[in-house]
Length: 304
Image (cartoon, rainbow, N blue to C red; front, top):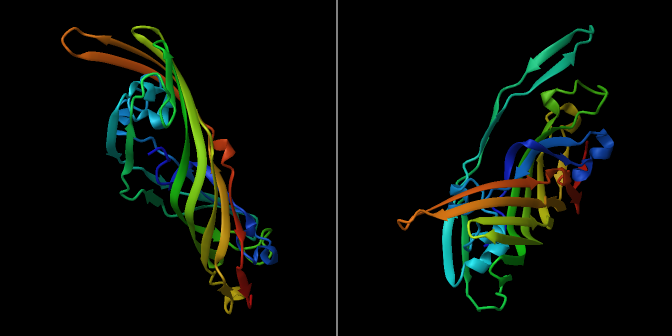
């Protein structure tokens, strides 16, 4: 299975801008974009994770589907079924400076927020057949013993759920202080079904019997899917009689491309055991994942 794992919204290393078009009253209240935790995609496969993800030059089984598809040329005729689980958790305590009416700056500390992933094993289920010198179904080709090349088409499928609390208080203290909890709005976003195409490719060179050099690239996943948006409106007085009608929307975002490179040294110890050491470099271009665009289809708010 070559699609990325289930998504987690707990990674504080990246940030996602939910654009003001999420809600119909954004123009009325002139609210700024809300900030939320970014997404995170984990590596997969028991054996690659056991190598710390250094499975670029040394990829030689069906786990190469994600790390370097050129390694499928060494997988032969085989079947792979494995499940891996990444336990990810985060803690975050926010502080802000608030200027009082008298001009005094005070630091306000907020309660610590904790996040964790549910138990969702990441499966890899794959099969390969050796056609000799011909290219296989996913595409891996070894024209000579010193060179392999491979690539394949992929699809990310599943659902994405997110919960975000944002402030509906207008900027510049038009009505209240920016941190007034009465203007907090609780939103739930459910996206799916998601079917997002992508592709990856790679090559492995074997200059000597003991050294392998690998490089691979993963294209972005472009997500464009229907969604439901439900909001618990703020408790502030302007929202006393307000109500939401409709919850349909469309969500677009992209998960980043990935570039990998690695060098592996392998040797036989002479007693039916081997040693393999790989140094790998992985760069995920999360700067391209700058927003989750949510466009309302029929969402309206009345009686504000």
